Length: 369
Image (cartoon, helix red, strand yellow):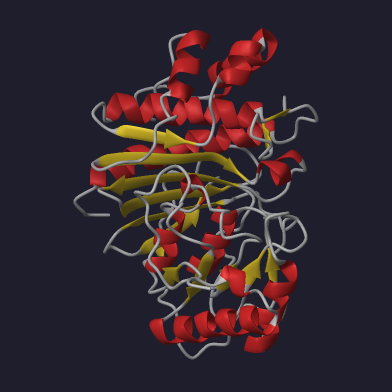
């Protein structure tokens, strides 16, 4: 792709390919070294730690003046020498750090922990790389759908997106798909998919692997994702009965108001959900949290949203506001999400959200009430 961020894109693509291969090496393990995070927001595995270290070390070497934001921190590794050694061994044994890949490994397990902790920043102005090393860790533990998310945000604006979905077929998409995807949907060919976008230059997809093995499909020709079609029926993607923060009854009521199947596509990870929206397998999503004080995390959305927006999709919060990526690690200036393929369809979905919240007596979730 010939664009102002060509070097950034090339480096990010090569590194995320190696990160995806690492994840697939860990995926079959019964014991993935999972530990619960101190904030009780889910597990973290040796895959999460190793991939964040790889992404940070490699992109810091290429762009030393940039800032980094990532989901994980190294406190659990510093407290558990055995776990730390497992992560370090995984990195050293699975990543091709030759000059052709652009990957740079930490120099030691201690340096690895420092690389992971380099991502503890809050986003600010300037160039900020945002990582979710494994989005959908709970499903990753079950060998189900997950994604690796890399984004470059410049002065609060999504500029570049690279997403690997090792279990999602690059052929899943299009405007006439009849099936719905779930966490257990796995690409039978083993190719997986790699998505990328630069703001103003469209979104693209290509196979991630050559096939059943872990050989990377480096020479595969990308396909540009088609623009969203305003007249097509709504095809939802959501997460049903798997997240305590969700209001499943509200989400069902909105689907009924719009006259669409519920839940439709049903995925835990937010990054795969944005991918389905970009490919056309889905074209709308709504997320209303149980409380106004609950907010999303930047690494679940930055960059991945750009894939959908580059097909013409519109993304706001439940109040109709643009997503503010300068608010911090938590998107504290926004409440929930509403996404649809065009401005006109977005207005319809947003109105349905407000109507259902009022009908169900949840005025506390509407701004100004």
